[in-house]
Image 1 (cartoon, rainbow, N blue to C red):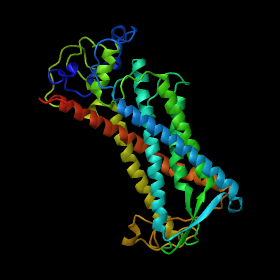
Image 2 (image 1 turned 90 degrees about the vertical axis):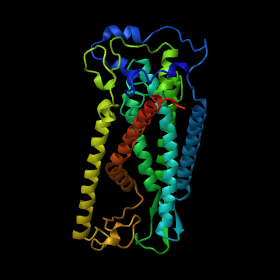
Image 3 (image 1 turned 180 degrees about the vertical axis):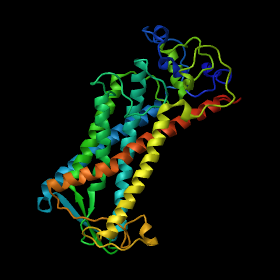
Amino acid sequence: MAALSYPRERNQRPLSFLVYDALPNREDDFGLIISGAKSTAGTGTDFYDRSLTSRRYALVGIACSTIVSCCFIIAGIANMVYHKEGNGAVQIPLSSNLSKEILALMLNLMITLCTESIGFVHGISLRYALASESRLRFNSNLRLLTATRGWSNPNGRLLNGIMSVLLIISYNSASLVIITSWPDYFSVERILVSIAGLPLLLLGVALLLQAVIALSGMRAVKILTWSSSPFDLTAALIHHTQLTSVPFRCMRGVSELDAEGGIARPSETQPSAWRAHPSIRKVIISLWGLVVAYAGYAVLIMYISNKFDGGMQLTPALTMKSWSFFPNDQSNSVVYYLPFSRGGWIFLLLNLALVQGPITLGLHCSELIANVIRDERQWRCATRREGLK
């Protein structure tokens, strides 16, 4: 790791090694940056971590996600075929509404593990696809909102948009798989729930298509290292002659892309991610916008619930008991009953997509903040005497 022993004496700004392709009007530099020479991976000693263990875990996660999706598809089809009299839903008695919520939580945890495994592979392939186009500015990027060139590219705009829709469908369908069938939804006594076949089928198809797109992206590029460290990424790109230094940018990081060229003194403090990464600003503003929007949505629901008696279900006035995490007889809500029909499912899916879709994409975008903080912490550790160890 000799190549990584100099960060303390060089630039302490986060991710400044990827500033090469972000410079405006620097066409002459691109010939120096990206080389078409044959990779030198087979010569010399590797001085970066290929993180093959992460690769094995990622492939195992993809395989498990594929198996789970196929099981969901089979179960959904079987449910719809063998329970036609129940409109494709099998009814199961449970002891309480808490049991139903626990089952829904376990299903959502399974979906999260599958989508995160798929997202890891998709994000790694995006990183090297951007590097091959001389557009990799940061080690961490918004996976679904950062696209490569070409509509047919697995990381292009078209398939990224499809991945976003499939991700929303995954969590929407998971919310509709287990539905309360008992007339009194807020009953704390024994309840009857329905395991719906159509949402289970949609969930399996959505997960399977996401896995296929992620595997296509992995096969479309050459992944040099599966490590999430910016130092391993830099070393890999340099070792494979895909990255060289940009002249006249000494001690200048990504937060000074518009600054004139020339030598600069090292900064006393590390610039914040808000200043260095433009996507961070957009994500934080969007997340606070969602907080305000859903707070307004909650106020609207409570107003409708109190003014119109909760639609088809009588609900009490707002009290301290109304703030329980699990629905109960004191909860304020708007309740409506729909049959297991084609029109009912379409209405439910669209309704959940409008309400839950922004949350799904917002949580996906918040992942960028955690990844950038991780990258900055590694840079700070590298400036210490003990280095990254």
